[in-house]
Length: 122
Ligand code: SF4
Image (cartoon, rainbow, N blue to C red; front, side, top):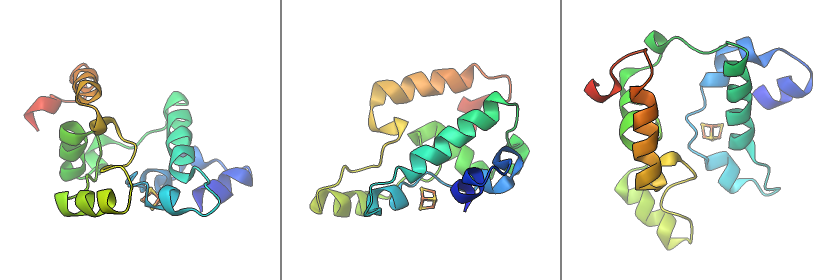
């Protein structure tokens, strides 16, 4: 829906729906046309932030923030799902920063530098 609205020229940066995606990558991994749906949503978010549109941290459920800081994804996959993904030939986790320990540490360091809150305390 968001991508369709963006194609129609609607100002999706101001829409709350842009931030509803949990970046689980389910749609992207299953798309028979290999459309990079999640990547498009992430890019739209990047553009929104560059244009000073982003949700208030107060509107983001604390569990999402905790997951993001600890795993690099707001909705990390359970060990059971990761195991099933491996069985069918997928990476254990989708393309998120938490797949690489060094990337995750760099990401946490970046978040720690933000004035929003003390991320490590959450
Ligand atoms: S990545 Fe997951 S939450 Fe986001 S649009 Fe695709 S299926 Fe929905």
